[in-house]
Length: 103
Image (cartoon, rainbow, N blue to C red; front, side):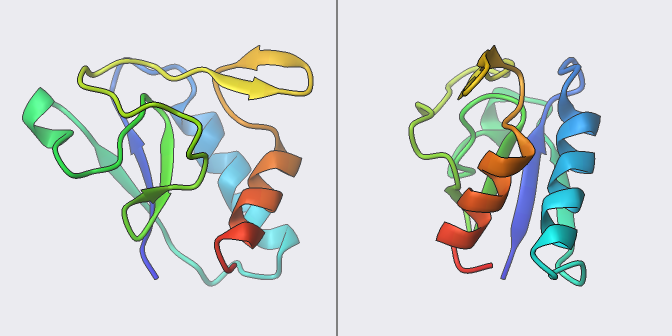
């Protein structure tokens, strides 16, 4: 299973998203699952990646938050959370999405 966190250099939420993703995996008892950080540098890096803005979390190339529209630009992403719009999903949202995708 390939779990990726797709991000761009300019995104202020990438590191926090990685930390939160690791925390969600620990809660699920799946700390052995490796999070592959994938830096997107050029627009051509987006092709076929499932990127919907930075940070995007994918399993086997599929965005685990499919409500995000595919992105054509290297841009930041906004997530809908119970607390309003945010640059990353909540821990609970991550846990639920990971469970929904078989983790």
